[in-house]
Image (cartoon, rainbow over all chains, first blue to last red; front, side, top):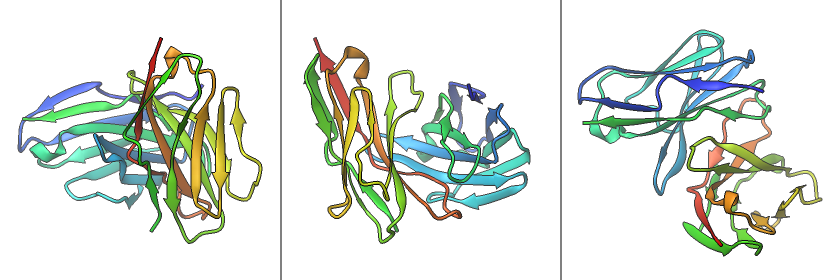
Length: 112
Length: 116
């Protein structure tokens, strides 16, 4: 089975801190995605990557950046965390652009 | 731009009964994919069912089936013989068939509760 893991289930940070959310997949998938999930808003795409060092902005990239130095790892970076970035963050991966997407368990980030 | 709308924030059903979750979408494309995902309290997103727009036949997966109405841009999920383990948030999602567009577009979700 494909496994997508995220570095933390829960994270609490302070306003202004630099925050790294890590996502690792173990099936050599080309595509990786970061979504944030908020009540009443569903899942919204932040960034995705279709290859190492390649990235594309999603619908809500402001305040975030990403890094994909290795195929298996896709990092989401909050350069200066703000309270409006308190949310659930979900990572996903797929073998190809049309392939089935597998999701990680999510990281619930609270910014105080 | 494509949009996905789930008009029912919450639904409830009794065990062994049938429930239908609604989803409508907007697109100018003729070829695309539609999905229903389930997110239980564990937060793990699980693919429930998938439908290719070019297929007229409605997809089924055990107790889960869809009613795909392409002209009406409607994609509802029917859960038959509901079980307590079906309680979760359900998301309808769209994906273009365009090779360049690989991300899913999600609706806002419907929370389903199941009572015994």
